[in-house]
View 1 (cartoon, rainbow, N blue to C red):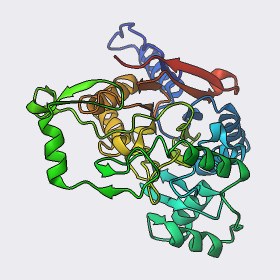
View 2 (spheres, helix red, strand yellow):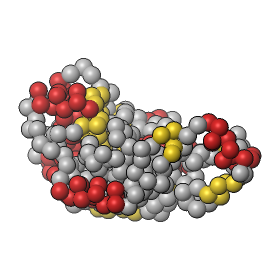
View 3 (cartoon, rainbow, N blue to C red):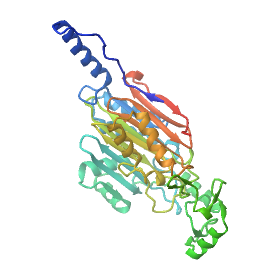
View 4 (tube, helix red, strand yellow):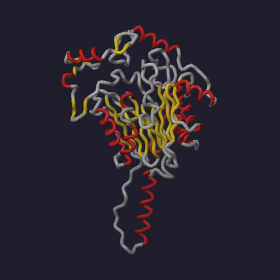
Length: 390
């Protein structure tokens, strides 16, 4: 599915060389076409897009723009709604406990005019992750703060210390432990089928397993390791992905906003994957992975198996592809296909928006839905779905 911000066709009428009327007509026609298309410059039509059908967040961002505030305000206001509403349990406090029961938050904002970024990773004890990321942007020269340092900075900036765990997240953690800590994201360790202690297997043990010839991966498929894995061209397919990522445990909100002045911003916020390894930081706070914006081109945001996706910087790739002339649809498809070439079982999606307000989404391993609001939707969010790429 690809949306368009009022595409028009230029007049094909011929102009007589001496006709002032024809010249004036063509000038007016070109100006009208530029205005209708947005143009990514002053006078462009505002638009908000975000991953998943989190329409309350979409609407809040739009309303913030309509109140005359800037796109960065709209981005933070919109995503903050999802943090407070705990969208699908994978955004904000009280969700996705890690292997010791902590809920930690990742978030980022990026300004496409200046290319400045503010982000936080592994934030615990403050619930307003994307607002803290905005403070990193506004009140420091740093790009990414993490862990205790991110918490200390947030408190310095006046954010209220408040637990990111809840009774619900503690219950999730206890249920996981009662299920022998399954699923988890360890590999090549002793204790994989239980709650640890997880200790590394010796290389000799791994070599012995490889000699067995075949093993069943997490999806129940068998791979022939005698041939060092399947290959596609020169690409060796990797098993190092998170097979348990799905709708229920990983619905990061990524949002991109274009203001009336053509300024493009993008950002993300999430509490990561459920039962992640303690200390894990995902793709969401990484510029070019979770989100990327450049006002001269557009923006892209991602969701899904961030541990795989960050290895490819897919949002940066998509924006650069649009810079080279790809449509949002082509850029999204290309970014996802690059990942699938190495990780054919990964689950993820990307949403692309060009400076003219054209947008598209692409997903792999799941049906991807996203939300859009603009003047063309009557100021009311619309939700689109795209089937997974084959």
